[in-house]
Length: 278
Image (cartoon, rainbow, N blue to C red; front, side, top):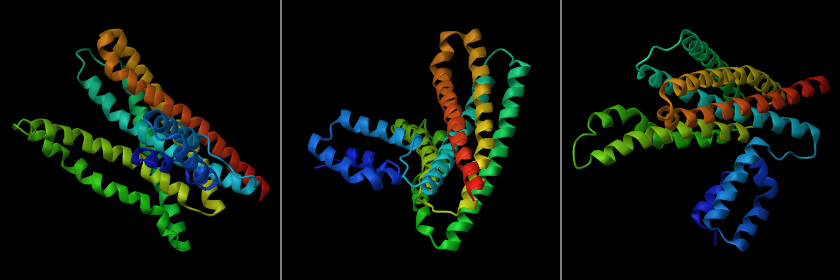
């Protein structure tokens, strides 16, 4: 029998991977067991499958799935970089020394770039929505329903924090105020990416999304550069005390920048190849 954790790990693989290897992988887990190490390996394998998706032999279908995977990855990296910006501003506002002008300008450029990339993603989302509505493939957007149970925790988080000092429920209220919005932000990054991989838009829409992903990737990279500047300044001024908060954020933004550049580059290459072959 496969336990719930292993089943969730199996479901976390991309649809293209599950179509080709899902039954074999599930049978292998049933034979070997589903201990913590197996579940951890499954989750790592799912992450690799999203970053390097399994492609079919047909060149046209390979390019289509490459572009879809690129768009989904770019969305996740944009969310990761977007969440880091307000945290960087908050950390700088709490420091006793003034922020260097160069760092502040980098943050301003990163914010404008990320907002511009958000508009590009919004246009792409509207194009996908129009495409799926026209073809009747509305079931592809079902993963977005996962946002419904976490959205209320995001909205009521400020009120929960205001009453977090009331005993004896203060710890539980504070935990819900922190973990609830965190769950919403994670779902906001993952659910649309899953929906993108389930859509089957036309080649024209996919090429538009894949090529525009390059601009989004550069916006994410700008945020990564700004984060490097902020963390470098904090470590020089605050020493080891700043590393507990800033170094994990630096790792996330740098990883997001690298993933966005690599994935968007592959998607743009597939999009341009498709245009030349048309």
